[in-house]
Amino acid sequence: MVALLSALVWGGWSVLHHRIAWPGFVGAAVSSNDGTVKVGVTDVPESLDIRPFAAAASTAGENGTTGSTNQLGSSSDVTALDTVPSAERLLIGNVYETLVATDQHNQLKPGLATGWTVSEDGLTYTFTIANGATFSNGHTLDATDVVWSMQQSVVAKASGVDALGDLRSVTNPDARTVVIALGQPNPTLPRALAGPLGTVFDAEGTGIDYATQSAGSGPFIVDGFRPGRSLTLKRNGAYHGTLAASAAVTIAAYDDDDALAQAVRSGAIDWAPGLGADVATTLRQGAQSEGQSDGTGGQVTVSTGATTSKVLLAYNHGNDSLLSDEQVRKAFRHQIDATGIAASQQDSGGALGGPISTMEPGYEDLTGLFPYDTVKAQSMLAYFGDEYLTTVDLVVTERWRSVAETIKNQIEQGARPRVNLEVLSNTDYAARIQAGTWEMTILSMNGTDDAGMFVDTDSIFHYDDAEAQQAYASARAATNETDYAARMKTYARALSEDAAADWLYTRVCFTAARTGLAGYPTAMVDQRLPLAEVRMG
Image (cartoon, rainbow, N blue to C red; front, top):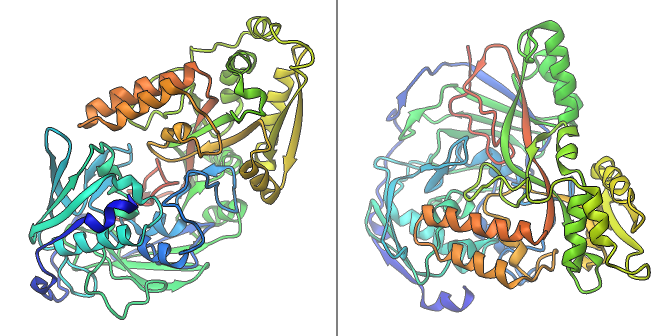
């Protein structure tokens, strides 16, 4: 990617063609009202600056890569890979818009691009930009801003910029058209443009403190911000699409999930998205005692929704690890009752069996590949001598202690090996994982199309398998989404059949809402919080 920067072509419609469009009432209101919706979260951001090129500039020199797959999760949960920063989750789709968007089923849909076409060879994408879009400062949004925003991310080597693929040119032949030319097919380019790399910023936006202010094109405008404490959004009356259903949304920070539950019960907030499973279950039980058996009724409704989060027992395939042996890995998958573990977890959406969730392209039910069979597992392990099969290290944080104890007990049902379970602090855990001094761990992978991490030999898994690499390369060479999904299914099966990990279950997310709240999302709230349709009454 870096080598191509000097040859990459940018250009077309000049920024001199920009016009000022003074704010006015240009959107169409549907079921809008003048009410305010109150939302509670545990992670109001410290900064509103989601520009990927700004983040890259601020960390220049700290990391020579463009989105390393070695990265673990945040300080709050270091075992959660691919987590979305709170500023992105709150602002994208509300204050800022992306070229392509996703719906609550994780399907792609038009964003600022009202549509796009792909050439048969998969090398040219042509996007049509929405007419009449403006930034909240009154500047017209057109194709120039799209090209400029992508250019900044590429030049700055923004985190994850490799997801854009082998860019050869990004041009805007007119104000409403953007053409992206690739050197090789990239079937996940539209999805990459549904995230930070596809967010469109004002090429002429000067004098804006993006850390505390905004100049987006979305259905809301930032009306107040106290870092780490609260964020107030107001309806953008000049929005080019359907106007937000509520005049304002206030987002307040709470210390923890217990405080959120109390706030929604008392009416201090109308909605608490992203509750933890334990608190949501307790809240639902309270709602059941007041209302209906499904958790609705009374004053609070607790809902569950699908996510792309995948919980797995990860294996270290390094040369010094017992799990570098294929037969040991496969025996463990028979020895561990993944279906039983999935059924026992409050945040479980069902057993998984492979690296792709039900919400991602290429999903296939692979739970039948390694049925729970302790007799078969012990037969497979009997091949190894006592001096080889002694102990295996299982390193986890407190978050996964209970599941780890279950896995330890199940493995130790046989005569060998013993499991050395270590429960570490987040800091010590991160150091051990990055140093590679572990054999098994429990973590979650939360993104879409993140299964490619397994064939990245620089990842924490150190997995190296030629068949899997070839299958993934074939998927990446697909020229359309249908072929990509089919080939990812082949890749996922290859990984699972080789027992690259033991994928335990997919997770659900929980939301709690006061009676009368409507239009709120219940799925994928760990990735995005679309607020435009949320309203009381």
